[in-house]
Length: 111
Image 1 (cartoon, helix red, strand yellow):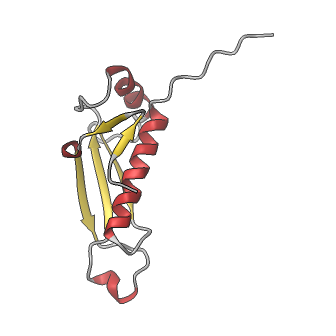
Image 2 (cartoon, one colour; image 1 turned 45 degrees about the horizontal axis):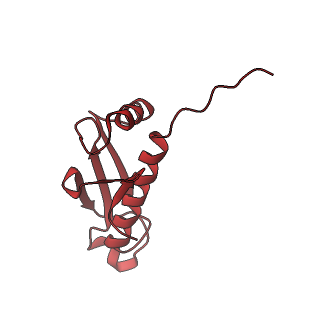
């Protein structure tokens, strides 16, 4: 796994991604109260130039209910390790944006 976010062959530059870390409600035992293992990844979709205009517009339309000021945010806290949670958040954002930029389905022709 890596921390790269790739959407339909386009890699989003790391400087356009904002990371935040906090204490995780997930597993961890005694370790859980001492480390910031929850990862939150934010991407300013409205201001980016990394995506082609057509894909950007599709994503803005598909995610309009999920955006907060043009920013999409995903969170991961299922692992004890901050690195694994970062990888999970990056994969989740890549999957979300890939689905949101999918072309519309073909129109059905009546038979």
